Length: 427
Image 1 (tube, rainbow, N blue to C red):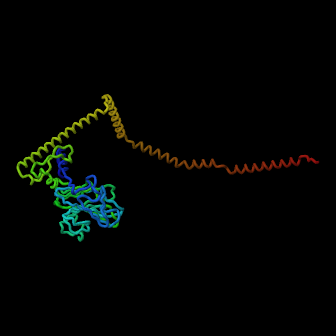
Image 2 (image 1 turned 90 degrees about the vertical axis):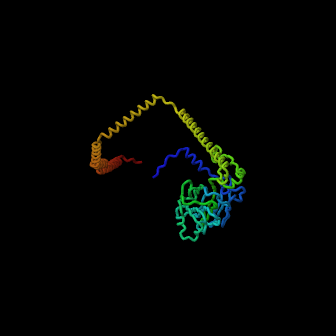
Image 3 (image 1 turned 180 degrees about the vertical axis):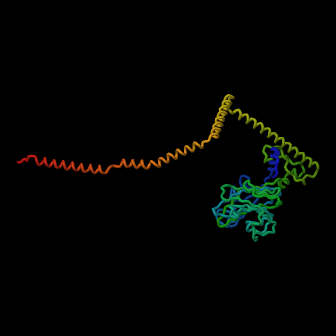
Protein backbone atom coordinates (compact mmCIF):
# COMPACT_ATOMS: atom_id res chain seq x y z
CA UNK A 1 0.00 0.00 0.00
CA UNK A 2 1.40 3.35 -0.96
CA UNK A 3 1.54 6.15 1.57
CA UNK A 4 0.49 9.63 0.55
CA UNK A 5 2.01 12.79 1.95
CA UNK A 6 -0.43 15.23 3.53
CA UNK A 7 -1.77 17.87 1.18
CA UNK A 8 -1.06 21.44 2.12
CA UNK A 9 -4.28 23.49 2.46
CA UNK A 10 -3.01 26.10 0.00
CA UNK A 11 -2.10 23.42 -2.56
CA UNK A 12 -5.52 21.83 -2.15
CA UNK A 13 -7.23 25.19 -2.64
CA UNK A 14 -5.22 25.87 -5.78
CA UNK A 15 -6.07 22.40 -7.08
CA UNK A 16 -9.80 22.86 -6.52
CA UNK A 17 -9.63 26.31 -8.13
CA UNK A 18 -7.95 24.88 -11.21
CA UNK A 19 -10.35 21.92 -11.32
CA UNK A 20 -13.33 24.25 -11.16
CA UNK A 21 -12.08 26.29 -14.12
CA UNK A 22 -14.66 24.72 -16.42
CA UNK A 23 -16.64 26.68 -19.00
CA UNK A 24 -20.25 25.67 -19.58
CA UNK A 25 -20.95 25.16 -23.28
CA UNK A 26 -24.38 26.77 -23.60
CA UNK A 27 -24.94 25.41 -27.10
CA UNK A 28 -24.74 21.85 -25.71
CA UNK A 29 -26.42 22.42 -22.34
CA UNK A 30 -29.89 22.94 -20.92
CA UNK A 31 -31.44 22.98 -17.46
CA UNK A 32 -28.73 25.14 -15.87
CA UNK A 33 -30.69 28.35 -16.41
CA UNK A 34 -34.16 29.50 -15.43
CA UNK A 35 -36.15 27.73 -18.18
CA UNK A 36 -35.39 25.02 -20.69
CA UNK A 37 -37.06 26.78 -23.57
CA UNK A 38 -37.69 30.51 -24.14
CA UNK A 39 -40.90 29.84 -26.05
CA UNK A 40 -42.00 26.40 -24.78
CA UNK A 41 -41.96 24.89 -28.28
CA UNK A 42 -38.30 24.03 -28.94
CA UNK A 43 -35.17 23.21 -26.98
CA UNK A 44 -32.33 25.49 -28.16
CA UNK A 45 -29.43 23.51 -29.60
CA UNK A 46 -31.25 20.15 -29.43
CA UNK A 47 -33.58 18.13 -31.67
CA UNK A 48 -36.46 16.10 -30.20
CA UNK A 49 -38.12 13.04 -31.73
CA UNK A 50 -40.36 10.21 -30.57
CA UNK A 51 -42.17 7.04 -31.62
CA UNK A 52 -45.72 6.17 -30.55
CA UNK A 53 -45.88 9.49 -28.70
CA UNK A 54 -44.60 13.06 -28.85
CA UNK A 55 -41.73 14.08 -26.58
CA UNK A 56 -43.08 16.65 -24.09
CA UNK A 57 -41.11 19.83 -23.40
CA UNK A 58 -42.05 21.47 -20.09
CA UNK A 59 -40.58 24.47 -18.32
CA UNK A 60 -38.26 22.39 -16.13
CA UNK A 61 -38.00 18.95 -17.76
CA UNK A 62 -38.15 16.92 -20.94
CA UNK A 63 -40.35 13.81 -20.81
CA UNK A 64 -38.80 11.26 -23.17
CA UNK A 65 -41.32 8.50 -22.45
CA UNK A 66 -44.71 9.08 -20.76
CA UNK A 67 -46.36 6.86 -18.13
CA UNK A 68 -48.75 5.64 -20.85
CA UNK A 69 -48.81 4.19 -23.43
CA UNK A 70 -46.22 1.40 -23.54
CA UNK A 71 -43.90 0.54 -26.44
CA UNK A 72 -42.84 4.18 -26.74
CA UNK A 73 -39.49 5.72 -27.66
CA UNK A 74 -38.07 9.20 -27.23
CA UNK A 75 -34.79 10.89 -28.14
CA UNK A 76 -32.98 14.22 -27.98
CA UNK A 77 -29.79 14.97 -29.92
CA UNK A 78 -27.50 17.96 -29.82
CA UNK A 79 -27.28 20.07 -32.95
CA UNK A 80 -23.63 20.95 -32.31
CA UNK A 81 -20.57 18.82 -31.68
CA UNK A 82 -18.25 19.03 -28.68
CA UNK A 83 -15.38 21.34 -29.71
CA UNK A 84 -12.79 19.99 -27.26
CA UNK A 85 -11.62 16.53 -26.19
CA UNK A 86 -11.35 17.76 -22.59
CA UNK A 87 -14.95 17.84 -21.38
CA UNK A 88 -17.29 16.75 -18.60
CA UNK A 89 -21.05 16.26 -18.69
CA UNK A 90 -23.67 16.26 -15.93
CA UNK A 91 -26.93 14.48 -16.66
CA UNK A 92 -29.89 14.73 -14.25
CA UNK A 93 -32.95 12.52 -14.73
CA UNK A 94 -35.77 10.72 -12.96
CA UNK A 95 -37.41 7.35 -13.70
CA UNK A 96 -40.80 6.33 -12.30
CA UNK A 97 -43.49 3.82 -13.11
CA UNK A 98 -45.40 0.75 -11.96
CA UNK A 99 -43.93 -1.93 -9.73
CA UNK A 100 -43.32 -4.19 -12.71
CA UNK A 101 -42.43 -1.36 -15.08
CA UNK A 102 -39.46 -1.68 -17.41
CA UNK A 103 -37.48 0.35 -19.89
CA UNK A 104 -33.98 1.59 -20.62
CA UNK A 105 -32.23 4.93 -20.79
CA UNK A 106 -29.25 5.48 -23.11
CA UNK A 107 -26.70 8.29 -23.13
CA UNK A 108 -24.79 8.54 -26.43
CA UNK A 109 -21.59 10.24 -27.54
CA UNK A 110 -21.30 9.36 -31.23
CA UNK A 111 -19.67 10.59 -34.37
CA UNK A 112 -23.00 10.74 -36.21
CA UNK A 113 -26.64 11.06 -35.15
CA UNK A 114 -27.72 7.95 -37.06
CA UNK A 115 -28.73 6.21 -33.83
CA UNK A 116 -32.05 8.09 -33.85
CA UNK A 117 -34.47 6.73 -31.23
CA UNK A 118 -32.78 3.33 -30.96
CA UNK A 119 -31.57 1.78 -27.72
CA UNK A 120 -28.46 -0.32 -27.23
CA UNK A 121 -30.54 -3.42 -28.01
CA UNK A 122 -31.91 -2.17 -31.36
CA UNK A 123 -29.03 -0.07 -32.75
CA UNK A 124 -26.87 -1.60 -35.46
CA UNK A 125 -23.57 0.20 -36.11
CA UNK A 126 -22.38 3.37 -34.38
CA UNK A 127 -19.07 5.03 -33.67
CA UNK A 128 -18.66 6.25 -30.08
CA UNK A 129 -19.78 5.66 -26.51
CA UNK A 130 -23.08 4.41 -25.09
CA UNK A 131 -24.10 4.37 -21.41
CA UNK A 132 -27.13 2.17 -20.73
CA UNK A 133 -29.26 2.22 -17.59
CA UNK A 134 -31.79 -0.60 -17.24
CA UNK A 135 -32.75 -3.54 -15.01
CA UNK A 136 -30.38 -6.00 -16.65
CA UNK A 137 -29.79 -9.20 -14.70
CA UNK A 138 -32.69 -8.61 -12.25
CA UNK A 139 -30.42 -6.44 -10.11
CA UNK A 140 -32.94 -3.65 -9.70
CA UNK A 141 -30.84 -1.37 -11.88
CA UNK A 142 -27.46 -1.44 -13.60
CA UNK A 143 -25.40 1.15 -15.47
CA UNK A 144 -23.14 -0.26 -18.22
CA UNK A 145 -20.75 1.30 -20.69
CA UNK A 146 -20.27 0.19 -24.32
CA UNK A 147 -17.83 1.29 -27.01
CA UNK A 148 -18.01 0.76 -30.77
CA UNK A 149 -15.80 1.87 -33.63
CA UNK A 150 -18.54 1.32 -36.22
CA UNK A 151 -17.66 -2.30 -36.98
CA UNK A 152 -19.86 -4.07 -34.44
CA UNK A 153 -23.54 -4.68 -35.17
CA UNK A 154 -25.05 -4.57 -31.71
CA UNK A 155 -28.53 -5.60 -32.82
CA UNK A 156 -27.24 -8.81 -34.40
CA UNK A 157 -24.71 -9.61 -31.69
CA UNK A 158 -25.43 -12.87 -29.85
CA UNK A 159 -23.84 -11.85 -26.53
CA UNK A 160 -24.30 -8.13 -26.11
CA UNK A 161 -23.52 -8.09 -22.40
CA UNK A 162 -19.97 -9.30 -23.11
CA UNK A 163 -19.20 -6.01 -24.91
CA UNK A 164 -19.60 -3.88 -21.77
CA UNK A 165 -16.28 -2.47 -20.55
CA UNK A 166 -17.58 -1.10 -17.23
CA UNK A 167 -20.66 -1.40 -15.03
CA UNK A 168 -22.11 -0.84 -11.56
CA UNK A 169 -25.43 -1.49 -9.81
CA UNK A 170 -27.78 1.44 -9.31
CA UNK A 171 -31.46 1.21 -8.30
CA UNK A 172 -32.78 4.20 -10.22
CA UNK A 173 -36.56 3.63 -10.29
CA UNK A 174 -39.10 5.48 -8.10
CA UNK A 175 -36.56 7.24 -5.88
CA UNK A 176 -38.74 10.33 -5.51
CA UNK A 177 -35.82 12.60 -6.43
CA UNK A 178 -33.65 13.26 -9.48
CA UNK A 179 -30.57 11.11 -10.08
CA UNK A 180 -27.29 12.50 -11.42
CA UNK A 181 -24.84 10.81 -13.79
CA UNK A 182 -21.51 12.54 -14.44
CA UNK A 183 -19.11 11.77 -17.28
CA UNK A 184 -15.56 13.07 -17.42
CA UNK A 185 -13.29 12.70 -20.44
CA UNK A 186 -10.13 13.99 -18.75
CA UNK A 187 -7.09 11.70 -18.55
CA UNK A 188 -9.39 8.80 -19.29
CA UNK A 189 -13.09 8.20 -18.89
CA UNK A 190 -14.79 8.40 -15.49
CA UNK A 191 -18.49 7.71 -14.85
CA UNK A 192 -20.11 8.44 -11.47
CA UNK A 193 -23.67 8.17 -10.17
CA UNK A 194 -24.95 10.43 -7.36
CA UNK A 195 -21.39 11.48 -6.42
CA UNK A 196 -20.30 7.82 -6.26
CA UNK A 197 -17.79 6.49 -8.78
CA UNK A 198 -19.31 3.81 -10.99
CA UNK A 199 -16.31 2.88 -13.13
CA UNK A 200 -13.14 4.46 -14.48
CA UNK A 201 -10.64 3.60 -17.18
CA UNK A 202 -7.54 5.32 -18.50
CA UNK A 203 -7.59 3.26 -21.70
CA UNK A 204 -10.46 5.22 -23.26
CA UNK A 205 -10.01 8.71 -24.68
CA UNK A 206 -12.95 10.04 -26.63
CA UNK A 207 -12.17 12.50 -29.44
CA UNK A 208 -13.72 15.89 -30.05
CA UNK A 209 -16.30 16.60 -32.74
CA UNK A 210 -18.93 14.08 -31.55
CA UNK A 211 -22.63 14.57 -30.77
CA UNK A 212 -24.41 14.01 -27.46
CA UNK A 213 -27.75 12.25 -27.43
CA UNK A 214 -30.20 10.67 -24.98
CA UNK A 215 -32.74 7.99 -25.94
CA UNK A 216 -35.29 6.06 -23.89
CA UNK A 217 -37.42 3.02 -24.73
CA UNK A 218 -40.19 1.30 -22.76
CA UNK A 219 -42.03 -2.04 -22.93
CA UNK A 220 -45.69 -2.91 -22.35
CA UNK A 221 -45.40 -1.84 -18.69
CA UNK A 222 -43.68 1.50 -19.29
CA UNK A 223 -41.39 3.64 -17.21
CA UNK A 224 -41.53 7.42 -17.46
CA UNK A 225 -38.06 8.88 -18.12
CA UNK A 226 -37.70 12.62 -17.44
CA UNK A 227 -34.60 14.74 -18.09
CA UNK A 228 -34.10 17.77 -15.85
CA UNK A 229 -30.63 18.87 -16.86
CA UNK A 230 -27.80 18.14 -19.30
CA UNK A 231 -24.77 20.39 -18.82
CA UNK A 232 -21.56 20.02 -20.82
CA UNK A 233 -18.43 21.81 -19.60
CA UNK A 234 -15.00 22.19 -21.12
CA UNK A 235 -11.64 23.20 -19.74
CA UNK A 236 -11.33 26.10 -22.21
CA UNK A 237 -13.76 28.43 -23.98
CA UNK A 238 -14.92 27.26 -27.37
CA UNK A 239 -13.25 28.66 -30.49
CA UNK A 240 -16.19 30.87 -31.57
CA UNK A 241 -15.76 32.96 -28.42
CA UNK A 242 -12.22 33.88 -29.55
CA UNK A 243 -13.28 34.59 -33.09
CA UNK A 244 -15.99 36.96 -31.92
CA UNK A 245 -13.50 38.96 -29.83
CA UNK A 246 -12.20 41.93 -31.87
CA UNK A 247 -9.08 42.30 -29.76
CA UNK A 248 -8.16 38.67 -30.41
CA UNK A 249 -8.49 39.14 -34.18
CA UNK A 250 -6.31 42.24 -34.18
CA UNK A 251 -3.56 40.52 -32.15
CA UNK A 252 -3.97 42.81 -29.12
CA UNK A 253 -3.51 41.35 -25.64
CA UNK A 254 -6.75 39.85 -24.33
CA UNK A 255 -8.65 42.00 -21.85
CA UNK A 256 -8.75 41.08 -18.18
CA UNK A 257 -12.00 39.81 -16.75
CA UNK A 258 -13.44 38.59 -13.49
CA UNK A 259 -13.69 34.88 -12.68
CA UNK A 260 -17.39 34.03 -12.48
CA UNK A 261 -16.78 30.79 -10.61
CA UNK A 262 -14.55 32.42 -7.97
CA UNK A 263 -16.48 35.40 -6.57
CA UNK A 264 -14.36 38.19 -5.19
CA UNK A 265 -11.24 37.01 -6.98
CA UNK A 266 -8.88 39.40 -8.81
CA UNK A 267 -8.43 39.69 -12.54
CA UNK A 268 -7.79 36.61 -14.66
CA UNK A 269 -6.61 36.18 -18.23
CA UNK A 270 -8.78 33.94 -20.43
CA UNK A 271 -7.18 31.00 -22.22
CA UNK A 272 -5.79 31.52 -25.71
CA UNK A 273 -4.79 29.16 -28.45
CA UNK A 274 -1.00 29.01 -28.89
CA UNK A 275 -1.30 29.47 -32.65
CA UNK A 276 -2.84 32.93 -32.14
CA UNK A 277 0.39 34.27 -30.54
CA UNK A 278 2.71 35.13 -33.44
CA UNK A 279 5.29 37.60 -32.15
CA UNK A 280 7.57 37.71 -29.15
CA UNK A 281 5.90 40.91 -27.99
CA UNK A 282 2.52 39.19 -27.83
CA UNK A 283 4.10 36.23 -26.05
CA UNK A 284 5.75 38.51 -23.47
CA UNK A 285 2.51 40.46 -22.96
CA UNK A 286 0.51 37.25 -22.48
CA UNK A 287 3.08 35.87 -20.03
CA UNK A 288 3.24 39.17 -18.15
CA UNK A 289 -0.53 39.35 -17.80
CA UNK A 290 -0.77 35.78 -16.59
CA UNK A 291 2.00 36.18 -13.99
CA UNK A 292 0.45 39.40 -12.79
CA UNK A 293 -2.98 37.78 -12.51
CA UNK A 294 -1.44 34.84 -10.64
CA UNK A 295 0.28 37.24 -8.23
CA UNK A 296 -3.04 38.98 -7.59
CA UNK A 297 -4.72 35.67 -6.95
CA UNK A 298 -2.04 34.62 -4.44
CA UNK A 299 -2.36 37.97 -2.70
CA UNK A 300 -6.13 37.51 -2.54
CA UNK A 301 -5.69 34.01 -1.13
CA UNK A 302 -3.35 35.19 1.62
CA UNK A 303 -5.73 38.04 2.37
CA UNK A 304 -8.60 35.57 2.72
CA UNK A 305 -6.50 33.36 5.01
CA UNK A 306 -5.59 36.37 7.16
CA UNK A 307 -9.24 37.41 7.37
CA UNK A 308 -10.24 33.86 8.26
CA UNK A 309 -7.59 33.74 11.01
CA UNK A 310 -8.85 36.98 12.53
CA UNK A 311 -12.43 35.70 12.50
CA UNK A 312 -11.35 32.47 14.22
CA UNK A 313 -9.51 34.40 16.91
CA UNK A 314 -12.50 36.68 17.44
CA UNK A 315 -14.84 33.72 17.70
CA UNK A 316 -12.51 32.06 20.21
CA UNK A 317 -12.50 35.18 22.37
CA UNK A 318 -16.30 35.34 22.23
CA UNK A 319 -16.62 31.72 23.30
CA UNK A 320 -14.14 32.15 26.14
CA UNK A 321 -15.87 35.35 27.26
CA UNK A 322 -19.28 33.65 27.31
CA UNK A 323 -18.05 30.91 29.63
CA UNK A 324 -18.80 31.61 33.35
CA UNK A 325 -15.82 32.29 35.63
CA UNK A 326 -15.31 29.39 38.06
CA UNK A 327 -13.34 30.16 41.27
CA UNK A 328 -10.23 28.12 41.96
CA UNK A 329 -11.56 27.09 45.41
CA UNK A 330 -14.59 25.48 43.78
CA UNK A 331 -12.40 23.61 41.32
CA UNK A 332 -10.10 22.41 44.12
CA UNK A 333 -13.05 21.28 46.22
CA UNK A 334 -14.50 19.42 43.25
CA UNK A 335 -11.13 17.81 42.66
CA UNK A 336 -10.93 16.63 46.28
CA UNK A 337 -14.43 15.18 46.12
CA UNK A 338 -13.57 13.29 42.97
CA UNK A 339 -10.41 11.90 44.58
CA UNK A 340 -12.44 10.73 47.62
CA UNK A 341 -14.97 9.02 45.39
CA UNK A 342 -12.15 7.37 43.48
CA UNK A 343 -10.55 6.06 46.70
CA UNK A 344 -13.89 4.68 47.94
CA UNK A 345 -14.49 2.91 44.65
CA UNK A 346 -11.00 1.41 44.71
CA UNK A 347 -11.51 0.23 48.32
CA UNK A 348 -14.85 -1.37 47.50
CA UNK A 349 -13.31 -3.06 44.50
CA UNK A 350 -10.45 -4.47 46.57
CA UNK A 351 -12.87 -5.63 49.28
CA UNK A 352 -15.07 -7.41 46.77
CA UNK A 353 -12.15 -8.99 44.96
CA UNK A 354 -10.32 -10.02 48.19
CA UNK A 355 -13.15 -11.97 49.89
CA UNK A 356 -14.43 -15.46 49.13
CA UNK A 357 -18.21 -15.66 49.24
CA UNK A 358 -18.53 -19.29 48.26
CA UNK A 359 -19.02 -20.50 51.88
CA UNK A 360 -21.80 -17.96 52.41
CA UNK A 361 -23.45 -19.07 49.20
CA UNK A 362 -23.24 -22.75 50.27
CA UNK A 363 -24.79 -21.96 53.67
CA UNK A 364 -27.56 -20.00 52.02
CA UNK A 365 -28.20 -22.88 49.65
CA UNK A 366 -28.38 -25.38 52.54
CA UNK A 367 -30.82 -23.13 54.40
CA UNK A 368 -33.02 -22.88 51.35
CA UNK A 369 -32.88 -26.66 50.89
CA UNK A 370 -33.85 -27.20 54.58
CA UNK A 371 -36.79 -24.85 54.32
CA UNK A 372 -37.92 -26.55 51.15
CA UNK A 373 -37.58 -30.03 52.74
CA UNK A 374 -39.54 -29.02 55.85
CA UNK A 375 -42.33 -27.61 53.80
CA UNK A 376 -42.44 -30.72 51.62
CA UNK A 377 -42.57 -33.12 54.64
CA UNK A 378 -44.94 -31.36 57.09
CA UNK A 379 -47.24 -29.38 54.84
CA UNK A 380 -49.46 -32.33 53.71
CA UNK A 381 -50.04 -33.55 57.34
CA UNK A 382 -50.79 -30.08 58.57
CA UNK A 383 -53.29 -29.51 55.82
CA UNK A 384 -54.96 -32.86 56.56
CA UNK A 385 -55.31 -32.03 60.25
CA UNK A 386 -56.78 -28.61 59.48
CA UNK A 387 -59.30 -30.12 57.10
CA UNK A 388 -60.22 -32.88 59.59
CA UNK A 389 -60.68 -30.46 62.45
CA UNK A 390 -62.81 -28.13 60.41
CA UNK A 391 -65.14 -30.84 59.03
CA UNK A 392 -68.53 -31.08 60.99
CA UNK A 393 -69.36 -34.49 62.78
CA UNK A 394 -72.29 -36.56 61.36
CA UNK A 395 -73.27 -38.30 64.64
CA UNK A 396 -73.82 -35.05 66.46
CA UNK A 397 -76.01 -33.83 63.64
CA UNK A 398 -78.19 -36.94 63.73
CA UNK A 399 -78.52 -36.73 67.53
CA UNK A 400 -79.67 -33.15 67.38
CA UNK A 401 -82.29 -33.96 64.74
CA UNK A 402 -83.70 -36.92 66.77
CA UNK A 403 -83.74 -34.88 69.99
CA UNK A 404 -85.65 -32.07 68.33
CA UNK A 405 -88.24 -34.52 67.00
CA UNK A 406 -88.68 -36.17 70.41
CA UNK A 407 -89.18 -32.77 72.02
CA UNK A 408 -91.78 -31.84 69.45
CA UNK A 409 -93.61 -35.14 69.97
CA UNK A 410 -93.62 -34.72 73.78
CA UNK A 411 -94.95 -31.18 73.52
CA UNK A 412 -97.74 -32.36 71.24
CA UNK A 413 -98.73 -35.15 73.66
CA UNK A 414 -98.79 -32.75 76.62
CA UNK A 415 -100.96 -30.36 74.62
CA UNK A 416 -103.50 -33.06 73.77
CA UNK A 417 -103.81 -34.24 77.36
CA UNK A 418 -104.40 -30.76 78.71
CA UNK A 419 -107.01 -30.13 76.07
CA UNK A 420 -108.90 -33.29 76.91
CA UNK A 421 -108.79 -32.65 80.66
CA UNK A 422 -110.29 -29.22 80.43
CA UNK A 423 -114.02 -28.97 81.51
CA UNK A 424 -116.48 -28.93 78.70
CA UNK A 425 -118.96 -26.08 78.43
CA UNK A 426 -122.47 -26.68 77.21
CA UNK A 427 -124.92 -24.09 76.02
